[in-house]
Image 1 (spheres, rainbow, N blue to C red):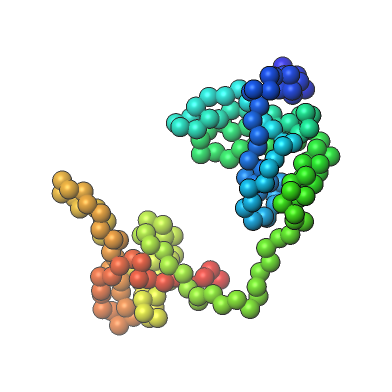
Image 2: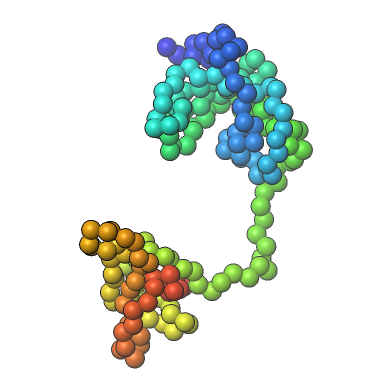
Length: 192
């Protein structure tokens, strides 16, 4: 079967098989729109599954997007946690759907701009020891003092209770003293 036949199959499916598209999610994910949520009434963009199955608790498969009764895109989501991959019939189809969404959301192609004067912390936190890269163990700070991580404690009790405890590490100060602290109390400098 060619994709053209798949599109025709979708258009010819009974209207009860079609559903209206959540236009907000679609616009954010597939039209690269940066918009505020708005419960707009979408009466022109529909979707119809041409293949479908359940992955854990989520309907997945291949669907065709139909705009004004014309197929405009094919979406594929093969697993529950995967992103939907959308391909468009034509560049004009993409532009028509995007223009429709922009009119409904009363927006243009705005983007988030960086506030160059906004203050950020000079360092950041990492809460889990196993999330560290090896070089970070020697490049961290405790109460604004440079330290190195020299030991790690399992965050789960090894007894039968298997209870969780916050991640603890041993840190070495520059004066060769060692202290046991919470991993979340350490700060890491930005990469240079």
